[in-house]
Image (cartoon, rainbow over all chains, first blue to last red; front, side, top):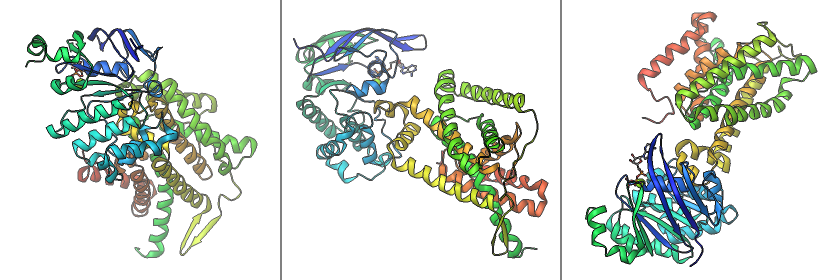
Length: 237
Length: 290
Ligand SMILES: Nc1ncnc2c1ncn2[C@@H]1O[C@H](COP(=O)(O)OP(=O)(O)OP(=O)(O)O)[C@@H](O)[C@H]1O
Ligand SMILES: [Mg+2]
């Protein structure tokens, strides 16, 4: 078994005195797509924020490429190549598409900014056409492309995508999942946080089901996709 | 009474006073726009910088226009340090704490100044302080013309910095989308401190421009900051252009109202206009509509 790229062990965190994650263990191997599924409020975004250093873990360890990062600042975690495209896009609305992309390389990949920007434009030709448009005026789908593009500018080794399909039309969701496969085919490991169960289980190799701050099911994606119990119990299907 | 002979000098003098107001407001609005806090220590930092400029001249004879080259970077560092090591760590991102911490700092600094320098009012006498430049019918004091030009230069440099440099863009990114900025690898604590430093450097420059024609005592900065607050609201909270235009505008309003109402009532005009403005356009001249 390949050594894990990301190894999370016994992660607890929450807000104020409310515990949200109650001991989460999982890993992502190099060039793998792993999906974390769970209902609204399960704690998926809390988990991704904890991994990125934005929300402090209360207990547990997070190792990325064998280094402990559970106490590192977000900027330092970015510098190591762990990049998150957050839920809700979080692009810079007052700046142009191009400025948004360039800020993606603020901490990492700065010297290859032009090359990477052109690569992002070849993936998303629409962004190329709209380089000097203010990001806040883009359509929802375009904003999601920009958020992913900004993440790619930092040359991720592990890319966390937190509900990238949120608010996209079915057609765009199809395209998005193809894109995720393509990104992964370039050797980038992907941690895909989703509610879009069927498609996520199709692209991922392995899956974890988060419920109420704990993983209640994990295994190869194909196996989980056929688990009738899972769908009924945890995803309300 | 309303002949150009009187109006033009009043207009020009108003613009010159307004330029200093604008610079002080610029620092305040920058900090507000990025950290979303009202810096209650702004006025005492202005006073402290005026003392620095005063002593640079009184003790070592350093001309304020040269001293600014040392005092502005020094106050940048002071501002950076205050935010990075005192205000940021104590406020924990809570608005209420920011208010109390900056207010507390203001009280500490003001009392330190009072303790060390007493309540005495001090002035410096530059050899050219009373030189004038004649423009048409207007006689303009040289230090005020220098201040006006300097403020335009500082505002332009700041604008270019914010628009075109990576750090400037990072500041704008943090202002609008903190989480997005953090996840792009921008060190938010550092950017907050840089912003606070820039805002403090603005008042330091204003202090050096003021001291040739003004006095300093431990509360000298307060009057300016009250006006600067109104300019920040008037121009639109967080807007650099708004601070500049608003500052110049307020200077002109003050100048005309002192002409019509008399010197001592001049500032009434500012606050009347301010109230009217709040009624008509609460988000300010260049503010984003809520
Ligand atoms: N900043 C916060 N302060 C307090 N509680 C929070 C905060 N952020 C999230 N929570 C709470 O933590 C719980 C988990 O939220 P989280 O955003 O991690 O869920 P999620 O699985 O990502 O849900 P969704 O699919 O709706 O995005 C929720 O009950 C939420 O109300
Ligand atoms: Mg979420």
